[in-house]
Image (cartoon, rainbow, N blue to C red; front, side, top):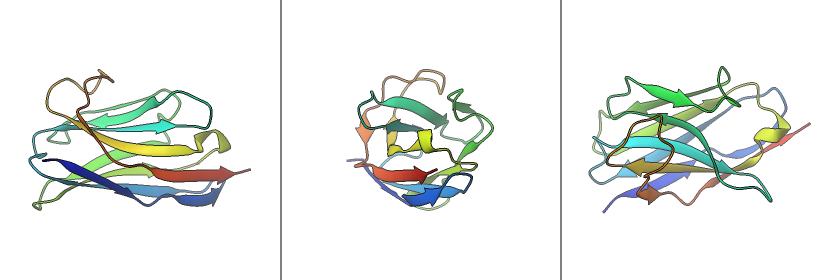
Length: 124
């Protein structure tokens, strides 16, 4: 059974940074990991993804150049990070970590497992 637990959300001002973490237990070492977000009144949208090896990443245009995802596979619990810099009020959303067994980082679909989400609020 795969479990994903996000942490690191909070309230920041525009221009500041936050780092989200996702602790992934279970057999996730070979999974592609993704980050998604849902803003109030909007559909969930893709943010970033990273392959199991960490060698390939993909980002939504809205966050490209500001957000970076990375993963640490060294321990039994895999940790995936989302470093968010130069945050904007429009980045305010609940951020979710997700995992999938198959599919590329450029395909935003096919995720099998989801975390509970962590709130990120960016004030002007």
